[in-house]
Image 1 (tube, rainbow, N blue to C red):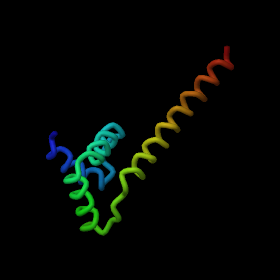
Image 2: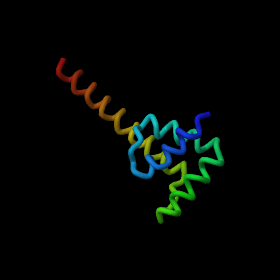
Image 3: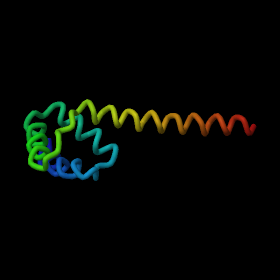
Image 4: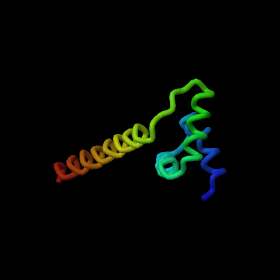
Length: 83
């Protein structure tokens, strides 16, 4: 595992600079890596932010995916009505 990459991503995550794909990968890594998870919590505390639980972030990603699916379904329905 490239822990340096994930350490860099901790900072990027705090600034909301990760893409959706990076965020998903990062969250999976945090679920498995206690050291990175603890480092993330420490950095959040130092910045006076409350550490976001991994599950909370995962729900945000799932909600974004659901929105994308609805957009695709709506577009598909509009296209079928035109026919």
